[in-house]
Length: 491
Ligand code: FRU
Image 1 (cartoon, helix red, strand yellow):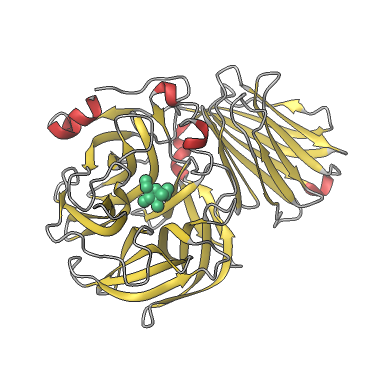
Image 2 (cartoon, rainbow, N blue to C red):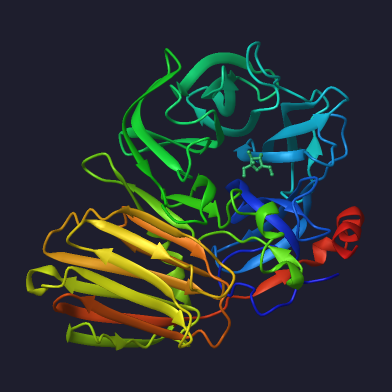
């Protein structure tokens, strides 16, 4: 069994034990454990025929890897350039059901269909004998029909699927009474062109008295993970939305999926990478030589604000990883700025509280994970109401700058919340309405973190920081009993 080693492996973000990972799949709480599945190629750190990797946790921090849940071995999901694509999970009558896209080429191009598998023990899955259970409706592009997200409402199961018709994205709705037979309901929501030609990984869930539809649009430039907030009309099978927003503006947040925690929280996980620059443009990434590629972003809790915007809070579980707390209060900073202590400067959490009423600076600049020459630059332009995340001088490899509005909903106070890990930086502000997540492949010597004011004074009420412990991750003995999976991972 090979476990990838390497200096760039994340310390507390979820990642595969080896090989390639992309989208989160089938996130679910089943029989006392959280189950995370993921798009996975176990043989190499490259995207290839897709399997479903699988891990379980009782606290969302400590993970046990399990045998591969789905492997490409059926006529509808066996293809070097396709296979078991993204999907979701549902618990019904003490069984765990997976619904995923089979992507295969039978000689006439790619055909995508929706398929199901079931498990009694949450470890071994059996594909349905009547797969595929859903095929693309007439008029829809069969090469762009994927990523089913399943849920139950009253007496029925529902699924939303990403689709494309006349080069415009659609979220299609299906319904079933027994998970075996599915009927087409209609178009839940669609793009008029302004929201792209395909919505990858749609997700749909209730939040407060509203419903939320999220997706990753194709064909909208930098826009990577969108949410719509509105009302669901089950009688008509229509979602009427009246608010739109960005889940994360950063360069590495894609294909998020949500799930309900047993305490009622709506948690969301994204893939901390991005197709536009990964993988083919950059030779499968800076971590290829370490035998792995891909991790999940920080798990976030989704909350509905009064104005029907959404906030995305780091899951409270991460607080258990905190140690070596440090706090500095009442600082007035100028252009010269200052270094702040945060764990070992590499993997840490930091909260900065600013009093805007006593601040004259036009902008705040952070230089994170620096080594003297290189650093990741994050700018909060208070005067213009903009935020920038620039990693073009971060590590000699990464490129790009993400930008977003800075809303400053509370005009008197501003809070910046940072989570840095070995290969990523995630920054939250605006009451967790605005986030930028990006990967940064900086080494251990990139451990200096600074804050400074631009054109004026910056009044900081407090800088609080913590080192974050590395939770254990283990391989299960159960892997050994699953011959086929163990062989694949050993290969
Ligand atoms: C999104 C996606 C999905 C697809 C999967 C394939 O990142 O393109 O639409 O199911 O990845 O790995």
